[in-house]
Length: 187
Figure 1: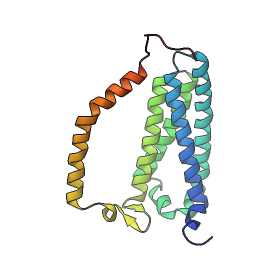
Figure 2: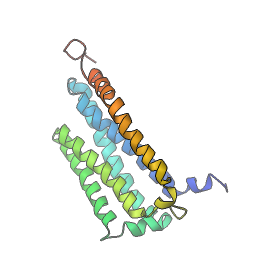
Figure 3: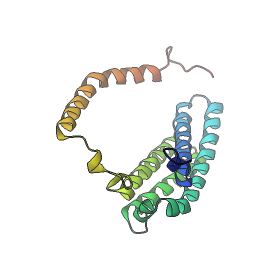
Figure 4: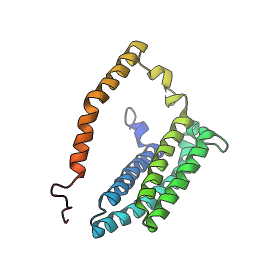
């Protein structure tokens, strides 16, 4: 299977894909656990799913360590002990453990905050470990950047979009998070 698909079928891309899926499952359970506060049975179901997905995420992370060493040497070097990316990965692992532990204590807001910190730390560790590359060894951050005129135009547009769409999105989320009659529906 030479060609386009061959690089995507190695162990490293597969484990990273599995980590991505496990992270999405974990985060969805994190948010749904707190959103189901008015239904204890549903909240317990999401709590259990979150614990299972957190443990699975930790196991996949441990499995990814030797695969990274052999299949992604540039990233492995960036994650070497003493480098900033390794500190971020340690923070991510500690946040994952803290999040799962806080679930056992039913401290859902703190568990959500720890889960958010875990995902942000993993993303930052990836960026720091691969710096200056986006795609090793072909595309650097500098190569991927648009011309200055495009970056300025996009910055102006983003500000305009936030001013115009921000209030509408706030109202939309506010409406969908509130109950129509003042009391929550039974599931």
